[in-house]
Amino acid sequence: MTNQNEKKWLRLSDVSLILGVHSSTVRSWADQGVLPVYRTEGGHRRFLENEIDLWVQTSREKREGKPEYALRDVLTRIRFRIGEKQLESEKWYQKLDNDARQKYGMSGKSLMQSLISYLSAEGEEDAIAEARSLGYEYASRGRRYGLSLIDATCAFLFFRNVLLDAMIAVYLDARVSDAETWGDMLSRIHAFTDQTMLSLMETYQAFEKSKG
Image (cartoon, rainbow, N blue to C red; front, side):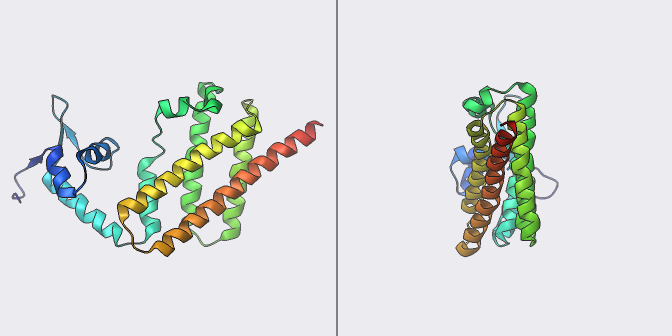
């Protein structure tokens, strides 16, 4: 290692060897903000050795901690970085104007934040109330922008699946051996999002009955 006054720069391949992952994984982590990275004038990625050492140490501590904290950290870090192309392939998204698309992005963040709070709390009744409130929000927003029940449900499922994918990524990255705890967390995520989806459907149904 170098002394504190000397900076040692690492290439992408160097970091790949240190972390024991493929170079494409390092590139992805750097671009997502997971790893601290710098760009040369030529656009090449460069890493500081002491920052990578610190990242490795911090990651190891997280792996030894509780899964819910690792999940919260990664979900917060991701912030629903969903590519525009991925969204544009969704039929429900194609029906929205720019204002509606921004509002749906806010709904995705609300779902993430509420779920994180739910996983960290013990009050099941309050959590269910929050889940159902989110369902009402999704339904009201969907109807406001002319989405059918199926479209609004697809929109919700899109964001829910992003959350589930994030959880799987955390599980694999953290390498937590307590599978029972992770299984319980997955069940709680499903319980929360199921209530949200049911509330969405019930709200749509209530709106339809009120029209009749």
